[in-house]
Amino acid sequence: MGLNELTIHELQDKIKKKEVTSTEIVTDVFKRIDAVEDRVRSFTTMMKEYAFEGAKKADSEIGKGNIRPLTGIPIALKDIMCTRGYRTTCGSHILHNFVPPYDGTVVKKLRDEGAVFVGKTNMDEFAMGSSTETSYFGVTRNPWDLERIPGGSSGGSAAALAADECIAATGSDTGGSIRQPAALCGVVGLKPTYGRVSRYGLVAFASSLDQIGPFTKDVEDSAIMLNAIAGYDPMESTSVPTEVPDYRSFIGKDIKGFTVGIPKEYFIEGIDAEVDAAVKRTIQVIEGLGAKCVAISLPHTQYCLAVYYIIAPAEASSNLARYDGVKYGYRSTDGRDLMEMYKKTRSQGFGPEVKRRIMIGTYALSSGYYDAYYKKASQVRTLIKRDFQEAFKTCDVILTPTTPTPAFKIGEKMDDPLQMYLSDIFTISTNLAGIPGISVPCGYTQGGLPIGVQFQAGHFQEGKLLQVAHAYEQHSGIERRRPKL
Amino acid sequence: MKITKDQVEYVAHLARLEFSEEEKEKFTIQLNNILLYMEKLNEVDTTGVEPETHAIAIQNAFREDVVWESLPPELSLANAPDDSGNCYRVPKVIE
Image 1: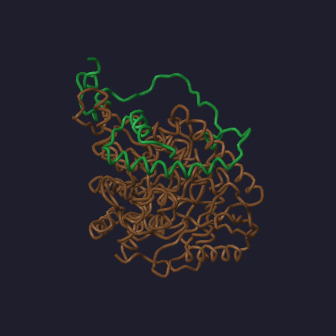
Image 2: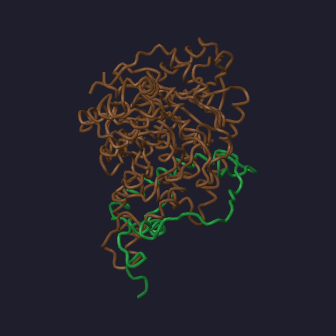
Image 3: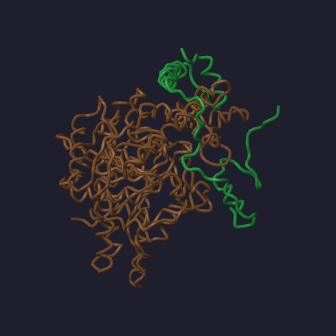
């Protein structure tokens, strides 16, 4: 068994006991990458030399007894996070040559905690997608079945982790982009509360929804990663200056007396039978741990998708106005004047899904339509948020499926945007309400595809979320499998 | 029809995008389907409901106006497709 198959906390223990070095871990990670990457295609950019330099530095710190929580741990970064000196493409042609002159806050924080970066992971272009098929750099494959998608938009991070090409990874989640690929690849994915983690240096998609979070092999690692990246940042004015607890202290606590809400609106017709059965078994396990599961209602659930697909494209159309071929990225040389240069640059630089969303967003914000679309959606968003506020008066956490189906086939939904959007139907509400959510593996289909269960909690209640998720994980009775690659 | 091909052309101009005839036809159909789906929101009575802009209510984030380190011009220009001196160069704007 290679060191690349272990978790952060398992490796930390070995590092502390001087049983392994960071260089040995990084060596095993790159052996694995060399063996499987041509089939999985998780990465857009490899940082091999940088990783070995980092490992050497980490080993020297370990030698001095200076061990931080992530010292020497190889981590993959979603290619939406600015890395000084390493290109940050966001999966787009328009940024294919963009080399940021600075590090994003999360990148800096992870490095300060001792992490070693192995590469940048593939993603749907500008994080717009649920399958990692819209990337300019090609499709990432699901390690559990190479004919299937890994989910998206952070599909590269989820696939890299499931394939043991890294020990942990980062993602960003605007409507489910961490939790959905985590579920489809059989790993743990956490979206923290809006404002919990700084987005300085994160390429913006929909600013009122975007949040950074970790992909990990188990729940304890999720707590370790959140400890490293959470907190207020003066460079990011929507990060919230509330105290950051030690999230690891919630790991191992029992959940006797917890109330878990089961919203009836999330168990709908059209949900895959094996997913439904796996999630219902989760409810039994949770009850067996002394928690009380109660039926609740989130009455505006059916409107989440429509609200999201107005608000997210509207904000995206504004955020993506900056890609004009002037200051960085791709520029078309076909334009005869400035207006033509803008139009040709953007039309050649963006892919079809990004253009589609810019068009929806521009239309929804245009004169005469603003009230009917953007304002209306924002009002319904208020009602969605109120549903959760009411629900959390009667329960500690909410339990739902993460996705309606297991991973679908590559190409299956590419011609039907609405069908593709429906794969985020259970994850979007979390972003609209700004609450935290986590996806944890809860079983496999007959065909061997992973299934995920989602827990949601109130604002800044990540501790509770990790507590329940960890208790479940420890008692789920699900055998730990690895994809056969 | 929620949106016509003419409107698609107008919105494309606002968004600084251009499309082939074939793309315009396809987008008109797809955008129509998406906008029809959005009609669902009209079922909801939102009279008197404040629109939500940010999930977490935060005040303006003021700070002291102090000088700190900023990107030097050569780094700011390092990714420029075309630059000259300390400026970005673009195709001509005025006839």
